[in-house]
Image 1 (cartoon, rainbow over the protein chains, first blue to last red):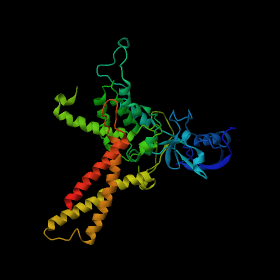
Image 2: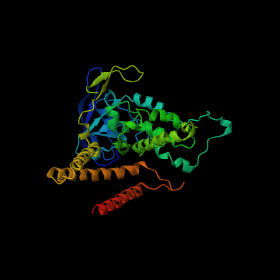
Image 3: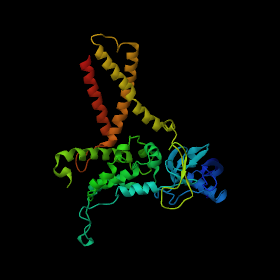
Length: 254
Length: 133
């Protein structure tokens, strides 16, 4: 680590939870030397390499793409690979696991609940007649049609939005921001025909109507997906579908 | 989730136990965005109080004075402040919700939607003000 300017020191207060010997999490403090270009994840890796090999956390790409290193930094859900230690001088930097998820160990949380919800919204292209054979070619789409949903396809499943959502924290039944944003992404896709099927999930009691539009999901999203907008737009679409079901033949089902 | 629940993970993999941090009752005081949200929700209280007062006043007609009493004025001022705060946040948020595509090529940008919202609000307020005067 020769680059990156002067060496400085900061205290990192790291949440530890070792289920084999603790009933709940405790904090452990580490003095971490860092340079200007160090992010919180670099600090954690320095601790793991030099002080305490037992500190457990997830990470992979270090460049805001993989969505693995989400944690709570000084109370705010952040990707730790995109959160600079220098911004927290003079310290301390408090690093905790993402809120609203069960903690498995230290900074690692159990995201199975999200994975199950993600499957329920069918985040793939649904064709009513089944997919046509490859020999018939692809389903074509213009760049303008792509623009309708491109923003919502940028989700990296980092789950910072769930950590920021007080509704999900208070009621884990809520399908939640990322899953609904991805449902909306496929609903807006010109090649898709699964909107009615998805409405059964996102229009259910656990779906969009639980959202009270706190809006923090969109604020913490590192990819500017804007799940809050996706949820509110899904509400509008659900109301439209409901109203149209009274005046269209067969309840609007095509 | 009133108490720290320690139990098996929700997944299929076998685990010793997981820790679920309880959401504290004062979660909405811990960060400004949450407090701002709660304030937005709470604006309904002074506005409801004003409407109750208004109904009581109507019930007492032609007897007057309820809305001009110190309590009436206090509630009215509070309701006005709450109404303005709610309207501002509403006009900002509704611009986030609605998508207006004037053509395949042009989607009205969010700041323009917001400006239209606020402009319409001012015009309607001016008309109401003119009628009331």
